[in-house]
Image 1 (cartoon, rainbow, N blue to C red):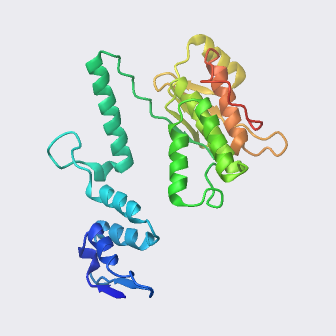
Image 2: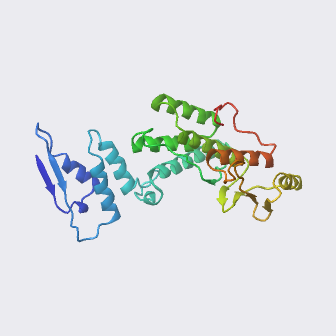
Image 3: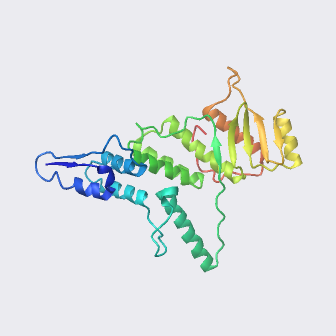
Amino acid sequence: NTLIVEQADRYGLSQLHQLRGRVGRGRERAYAYFTYAPDRPMSQTAYDRLTTIAQNTDLGAGMAVAMKDLEIRGAGNLLGGEQSGHIADVGFDLYMRLVGEAVTDFKRAVDGEPIAAPAADLTVELPLNAHLPHDYVPGERLRLEAYRTIASAESTDALAAVREELLDRYGPVPSPVENLLAVARFRLQARSVGLSEVALAGPQVRLTGLVLPDSLQVRLRRLHPRAVYKQALRQVLVPLPREPSTHQPLRDIALLHWCEELITGLTPATTPTSSSFKNPQW
């Protein structure tokens, strides 16, 4: 009922998992010890293998071990005979998404359908408490799945469905999660007008990717006299607003609402992706 493996850092992840399965089949509690030399440097891959084995000890953990092994070793060239690839550099989830997008574009090209343009990259860096708390969504895998679902939502209707699912599975939605959904909704708005960045730059909020005609430049100066528009960089710099009562810079959801109003004021012809997502905090 006891297994000791020396120099376990030299074994593959599937080998370690199979070795561990050789004990623990009787009524007595079994133990598997994986040892390594503390005076010899360990590679990052070996560290990932041992960490995965240590973290996945529950019944049915074989699937998680197999997925991690696939991520470490790589899936190879899925559409050809050559078993090699760059999955280690981009990660398994991103790799699978890239392959899926490539296959979809190929099918559309064969069928003569137009290929959709890829979504523009957008960076949002604002002082906002937006995350999924550990005590609200337990388990790293569930949180990653929720983050992925929120990030992949392409409309406010999809975000509404995500919020309903969170409410149904985990109970009342706490403030950090509401903020996270608000950030996702804001990203949809910012991406729809061509923005590539919304970030805090010292005492200013920087918007990158806006092309303002003369009429909107006049509007910008009227609404924010100290704002600066850099036409060559397609960049707008607006002084950070402050709380009327405390005169402290805006933060959290109030700052996000202010940025929404700023974008709406500079792009009056733009409408949200959908108006059916109703939330009392928004």
